Image (tube, rainbow, N blue to C red):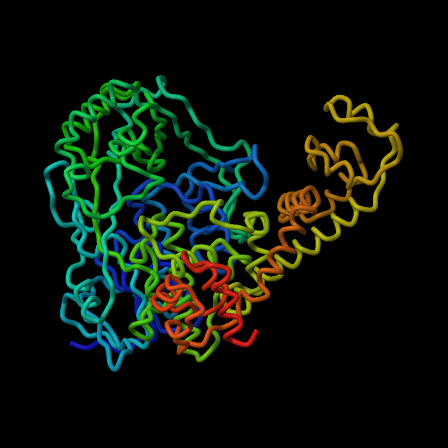
Length: 626
């Protein structure tokens, strides 16, 4: 049987697939989303949360670019926290605990109501190609679906194998079948295929947890939201998380199972995430620590299921249970399902262009864990970018590529395409050289104009950003020009242990002090408080925050911009596609090998390849007549 032709077919309805399909259809492409199970769209397979350190910035960027992850999170969250507030604004990261069932159903509702998007429950087992170009897909039901472009977002399902001690079985998630055949087909097309692994902990019946023995971790007293859209509202009802700790007895019990652990016996070949290791890996690697922190996270408002973050394991079930019962508060804990490890196929992302189109097959795009990443947020932003670029190419338009100076999304994709991965890739603020420019509070100002030009961000979204930016400008000007006298503020400054004034000063000099924030500045200057009150309430808190950050950290922001501008001089200078690096003998041998393998598209990309020195870059610039 043959389906009608689609512009874009997206394979897989996880976080990457949902964003890819929404973006493609939102840009006017006739789009089909194929998934094994329509009831598990955007399933939160691991922890039921969105955001976190650097990940929260990505969700804000997805939202500013017209994606849906932020909106769905706002509609599904049961707790909100802004992390790292004790550090500088470059480190502030929003995080939301979500109702996982509601998150999935909200995403399905979004997708079912996007014009031009069709959903189909089936499994893609093969690709149709013609002269190096993808022309469609073949499903398990032997249906041929013609397509002008295909986006693969298969997650952990490609040849997935689940491990619980000595028990091993095939699966993409526990209780769900793996995707078989597609990896082999891609290998035949010339793709390199490797394996990674990840894991998840037990799910616990909350009725059996002694919460009074745990440390409660409430949400923020004034919760924010992820999306800049006025269609979502701040959270009102919050559910607490909790902290728990392993102990030496827990560690001894876990060690007893090491001889039956697939991780230590070598049955799992794939590399796991270094920054989110299993509990057995953690106690082996940090053997000197007598306890490890665990986060007890609710999976929803109307379920008793709890996720024990930090306790992922592939040990035998009886070892998992014995170790769990040794933790304070979990002595009588019952579980809904065990922890397990999953090993799956991925495709080293150096086989991709910056658009996430594959180099081997034209109009074929990869996004998400298929590229070696881990995390909902990392997957979602790749899906968004792949969907956008698939449509732009079909329309004959220039590709949409974000620089490292523009977005965390740009950092992530550049890292993947340029450096590849040797373990599941997770985003951190430390990966972004220009993180003070890429704050969570300014994602809308940075990216909404780009999204509006693509047709994803609405006119209303664009108007709201322009209104906010104009208000920030006016408030900044007010603070820079208005003065206060010592007699007006010294008593208040003294009560907050801030040095007294000796003469009239501008408000700007006060906000630059570390101990003074905007709320205190308004207390010092009633005229400023009046000015702030005149800002529309719908954008007031965002304007105040952005203004404070811009003024307080102005010198550092300007310095970072200067550095970025200097580096950008040659960042986008193109390298000829047919340049024979091996013939350039002035390059080091390692550089010739690495450049020939990676085929960088720009000088900036070449400069970030491990083994390519500044001297090699100078040689390239000379060869290209710079």
